[in-house]
Length: 272
Image (cartoon, rainbow, N blue to C red; front, side):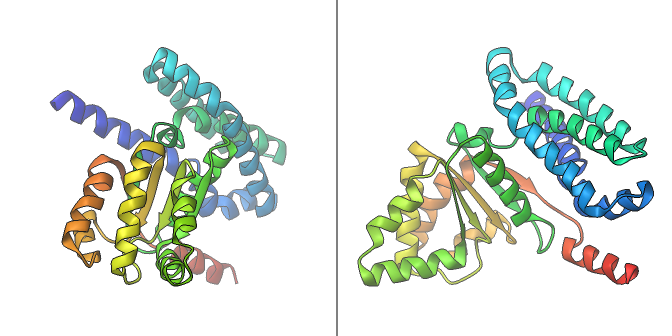
């Protein structure tokens, strides 16, 4: 048990550092990188887009290699490539160097970051944290990567879903909506806990979650810790049934820090 805990902690730290030094890096430092090298911010994001394309291409290959050989060697190699890419980026002196560094980073991102693999294995993911830290951004990154791997994805803001369920109950289109929610391999529900959940919405969630246990994965983001989710449901019995199927069988990512909107707004004011 202790060995498993240690492995989980080490892997979690490695993944956090990997995401921070790749997906989050452009959002925080794109302007500074461009200014230091003498290129536009859009060029930096263009190089990052190249990294995403490389990651999308290498992802399926890395996944098959992990399935065949195990994850240890692939993750070790990806960390070395990450380090090489960051070193190359730190020494970049032109746009060509930036693109080359990000292409190298893309190799590491596609082989070492835990992205859409959970969707192929019908596993769930929960991303929690305060407002503005990047929960929706991260969920969209998972969704975009899944789409690149040709994994069907549906995205819903939870409050919008509740409204659609209410309308579907009245106009008789509820079976069609349930199919829409159950069919994709990955269903993303953003900002769970925002908006009032009706009894009919709770029942729909139970039906969909129960069906998706056998057919797909669920990704939820929320400002609230999972310990408070039970109070969102109007019926405690349905709450028990839904959360037992989701929370206890999910990988979790806890985001912390200041709001990205606040940091970017402060930066824009300083540059003005």
